[in-house]
Amino acid sequence: MYRAIGVLQEKWVLHIVRALLDGEKGFNELARAVGGCNSATLTQRLEHLESLSLIAKRTEDTQGKLARSVYSLTPAGRELQGVINAIDTWAREHLGEEHATPAVPA
Image (cartoon, rainbow, N blue to C red; front, side):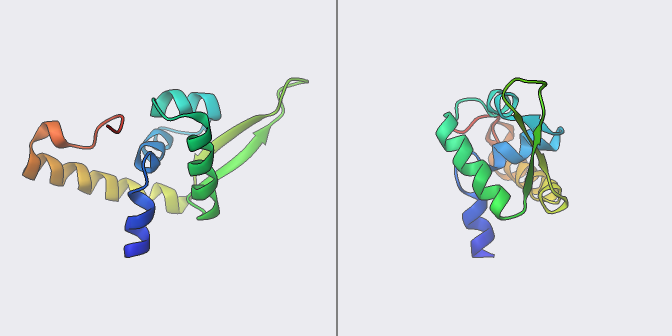
């Protein structure tokens, strides 16, 4: 349990997962969806989540341009939807609506 909490409490992790719950995204699209996370940190978090098999990365051929990395949740990553919903519900019930999971971390 403590390892899971350690992963989920890393800044930006839940925001990355929430963004990918809407479907796969390229790096730049994901950066815009997460908002406020610098490229180096986003890269680090994505690599970490990939090493834990929570997200998958594939490379798209862009017809002669630089290859495009596309990220998606694995089945294990998609299972975090329930965790995120539970956190949101708890926050609304105990901290008020304004304390539910924010779109961008402070």
